[in-house]
Length: 155
Length: 140
Image (cartoon, rainbow over all chains, first blue to last red; front, side, top):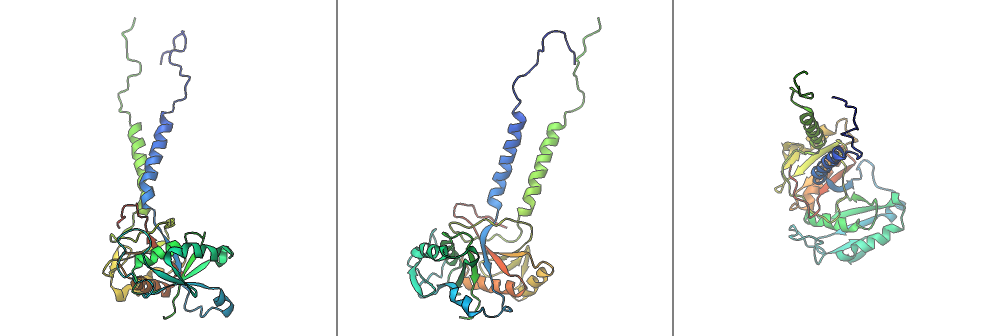
């Protein structure tokens, strides 16, 4: 490069943003590609059979969401989004339509410490998997960190 | 006066942009590779608010197809060999998590039996994979 005695002919006073834009665009593309690939799903605890029956005082506090075939006869996959229509579930001893479940579980679990927020799921074997998942999704929608437990006893 | 010479003439190809692009591609594939799950394409159940499950590389993937065919990772497993296969996979990995990708047309009982087998093999909890309604179906 030749330095001539005159003024600085190529001096730029602006910051060169091109590399910055390059990097940002590449990051954008990376995250766009990854976003749909992340798995989504629900953790389900399965109480070990070796652990035996829970103590009585704990049993009194358990909240069991029961979905049976008589109240919720959904055996085929729902063909539209949303909760299965005309479906009734039981929350402990209380019968309620599935549309009211989210509000009810929110109330029930709001009074509990986060470590006690466990919803036990007892669904009939013949029910459709997707319908059960949607009901679980509704039940946990209003409660942060609600854990799902699977009822393992024979029904 | 000497003959004019192009002062900045380079005879070598400028490889810097090429290296840039190749490195970026390398990074993209490094990030994506663990996310590409093997196994069959399963039509997952759709729910409104499935929480994200971050992939820490400690997941054992179980897929259940519509007819009840079981897959562990990328291997198809017969129903009576499923428990042994899971118990084998559990060896030394008790802090891993089994994630179940079940077809949305299955009955709950089919998924529940798989969950019980997973529990009997020594895992404390499983993940049931779902997707949001607006997402494209992610296959294998």
